[in-house]
Length: 247
Image 1 (cartoon, helix red, strand yellow):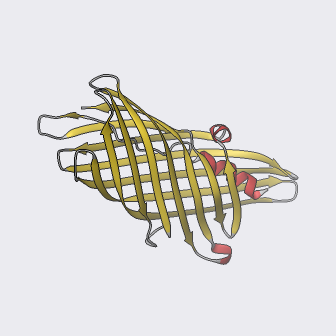
Image 2 (spheres, rainbow, N blue to C red):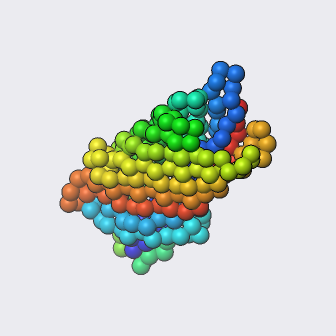
């Protein structure tokens, strides 16, 4: 009962997880700027443990959409000939219910991810990155039935430092290819965390670009033991889409 409810709700928390890096236009001071709302049709595969209770998660995108109440996500970056600064914000608020034996189980989840990173452009195509990703999870499980009425909640926050590389190369005047990979955690937050994506971008106009690609992110975080054990061991992956505005 518990694994099914928790799996469905936590899967909805990652219906969006992307940070597409768009080709922006040069400003008068030599800096380029881009802001991009984005969406990822992501599924989840892994396990979550709350208050010592473990739930296996394997939920496709179709089940996620049914439980999504609210989500907001946006990516921003700025760059010049040598340096790159970027940030990414993702927030989701959701609640899902399932019929269980002799009652109803409801799971509410709030998840926030905020990333800040900087990079040095070794060449116009290749950039070295370093940054940190803040992760915040708030989970609430409620059971209402003929025999039992109970509510359990748990929340955790942590920061994953990371290092990585970014590749972006033009394919033509309007098209480009991008890819990024990073690894982090290092026991500071997650034991191990990594992210990878590849995308294709199209400049529709001087201001608007369309980006399509595929992304995967994996986090293995653990805190506490016994009945206080909290663990998040999850891989999130799926196709992504963004509309980037350059200025």
